[in-house]
Length: 400
Image 1 (cartoon, helix red, strand yellow):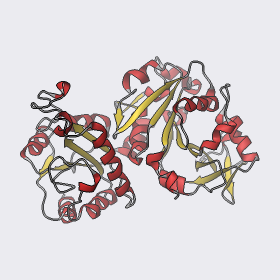
Image 2 (cartoon, one colour; image 1 turned 90 degrees about the vertical axis):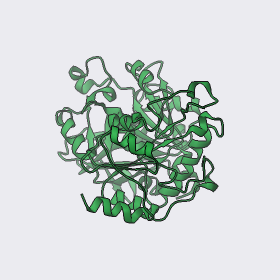
Image 3 (spheres, helix red, strand yellow; image 1 turned 120 degrees about the vertical axis):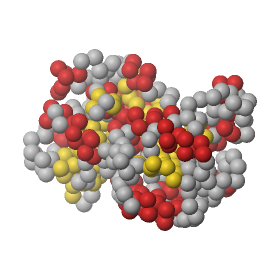
Image 4 (tube, rainbow, N blue to C red; image 1 turned 45 degrees about the horizontal axis):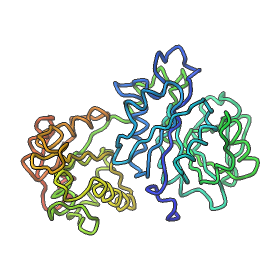
């Protein structure tokens, strides 16, 4: 995969501007991505599914009833990646909306629908794009072959083409190079019905088929069973990890990548957790930010580098929560006791609120009493780290 395609250099774009005409009577006052399933907004599932890939930015293209996106998500961090909500002054459709990305100087980007989830490996999709092509589309199984004609797609010699009856259909996940903007203007148009046909006719778009989990809440067929399907796919155990002293050696206020040294067995242990279908969360006190020893940007930059190191070994951190608060902080807004700082458990509870976590086999590793107390408040099993991370993780899981 070319260096320019590393995910920390590209953006994740979420289309969230549609009116939801297929399920209009079910929407009420909310846009589709803000409908709740299992007490979570659907867009939270979309973010959970995709934010682990270490994107440069997450950009949400908002149109219909966009105020709620700005209230809930704009300028927030998701797994240390900044969310930017971009408002459409007029509805431009799934194609025209892409013209707004030029305002943010977007180049290469992954595009996903805000009302669908296709839980594929995005690294795999990007790696399969050929040098002289504009983009690639992930295809899913067309179970009843009754989708709209322009959604029925097939693949020949990696190239995408329309097929009247096909076992495959558009899965709503794309990777585009910046050349896509040659096909986009600020007029109302459809990506699926107008831009894709142009790319297909010019042989500039590829496709790749995946068997992974797919759901479209804009379809009444999927909508009725969404709660159970989402829970079945995403409800799983989690490990909560303190960072310094657990993942890496604690040299005191580690904030530069050159000082980040993994403890014995960490890489293999994280791979084992993924093999056993665990979420991996990092929750870390970062008083160094509040004390002006380093900046929040330094912390985020470090973790972007950590994520790239892990990603090369097929390890993905699902979420990182950090607390800059300390009673001796030099930055006024951080100079206080906060439940976000361990031994408070607010970081753990925030994660539990946004993810479907089975607590029965979930646990936490930490090297300080404050970690233990935070875990205890959240009713998590707790372990102090042993010499070899992998051997300890394996022992804990196998003894459940």
